[in-house]
Image (tube, rainbow over the protein chains, first blue to last red):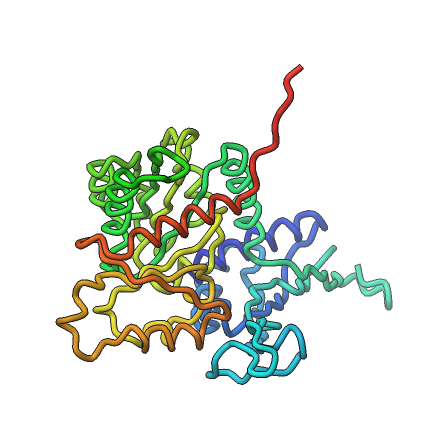
Length: 113
Length: 245
């Protein structure tokens, strides 16, 4: 359940950003979570609801954008299908994960006086 | 204040951040890495399920490295930080094997993070070791998410865990530089387990699959494991020479 520790890091970061701008409340957070990031989106959402109380995010929504894993050949850019060997059959080189490992805070919508 | 109509309502502004949520952990990990680099200490993050044989591999590493010949270091000085939910048992075993070891007691935390490792370093005279093994909490999910400042990630996977563990826990194996297939001496008793099937599963989740078969009990495979450790150390940048006025 490392999602709890990720939410704590998220709330600390948002608190710092909000304070720096003198915000009085946060309305919405947008985060991006990759399929191969090791973070479960449902658990993250549960952890957020648990920990947001008595923080500047107490009434904030968490908007989670899931990012599918995409593997491709770094040489010919050919997509490598999920569930197959992570190596380009044509070029013989290891596949590269082009997206899907993100654990990102994209945007904070905050209320300023 | 809303200045479009002058109503006096507060204004909601979007602030674009586009930064890793674990950026704080990444900074602490970079700080740890700098410490290790300055002291030319090779840090290895050893992960795996509970009971995969992480502690046994380290005990065997101490035995094998003490007895080998022709190595660049006459005898490796080994250190370890052992992540443990509740006990000091692993660190105690490692100390008995001649490894300078301390526990990091995590309580209910299912993984180590860079700050825990940093605090752990304060309790361990680690400056003079050649290798610092960070034995992570037994778990195939959470530890994979946190950079600790290590030079390499190693995952211990025992033959008794079945052949499809890599497919079930892809993130852990995706992050591994090396997979140690442990308890290889038990293979004769496991007719359904084939190392080739484990290797095939690894190739589906690791772009650069690398595995070695080892037995902490018989010592099989320990030579190539030590050789791999040497290669990691050689590849690590040497500390800059400091000129004191």
